[in-house]
Image (cartoon, rainbow, N blue to C red; front, side, top):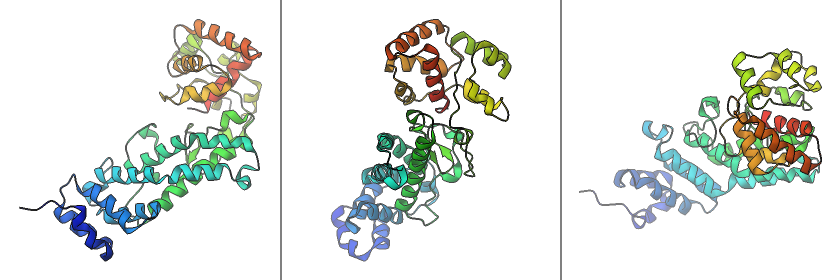
Length: 328
């Protein structure tokens, strides 16, 4: 009968290195016990959290079952990355770097989304959907343990690309709060999946001043059901002169009519327009469907918020619509 492997058993093998520890762990530990032991051993091998994380990747054999998305091995790696604090630290450092932000202190707001970015990086390790829609993932961005690259280097590079995109958009946008929440992951977008995978600028990058007064309620439902074109939205007043700058006005329809994702983080982003979280949630609900039947009530709520903010209802709807367009 095989005896249960313990940390005490592994301790004498630590000086012998990764191969000896891995062989012993896999030969004597049960399937459910091997990963906690390997994580412990990785930290005995290296005091630095990032070095320990890379050691864990080498300790795991990555056979067929372990490479599968959602496997205990991938989850162990994701837990190790989260515990290391690497993503959060990287986001914070980049968002405060004056050479990247241009000295704009307001861009420190980017660090507030560090946990959102971290979750998206973790998704790329586990291959399991957590807060984004896996059908829109660029499969080439998922972590491949067989390529031999360090986990820390891979995660740091991905985080850097995501964060610098947020900063770039925040600096170029017409209103910082609108794009300060935007991001991409080497071609994919954190809140807006419109960045081409080959790195070319997206429509919103090329035209940062676009304004999207997204239709509400029954108007929204009618446009979606009937398949409205630009002329229909112009006639009904759901248009903005900035959209006339587009080579093809039909490009605007995606941002004006596409339902929002069912993401609990979207109301928080919408609230940066100055509205309460309750109103932001009601607006997000309307925009994530084919239009709610109580659109009149939503307009009444928005009118109250516009009065409180001392702006016109139209201005508030343009701000919310543009934020929503960047959350698609």
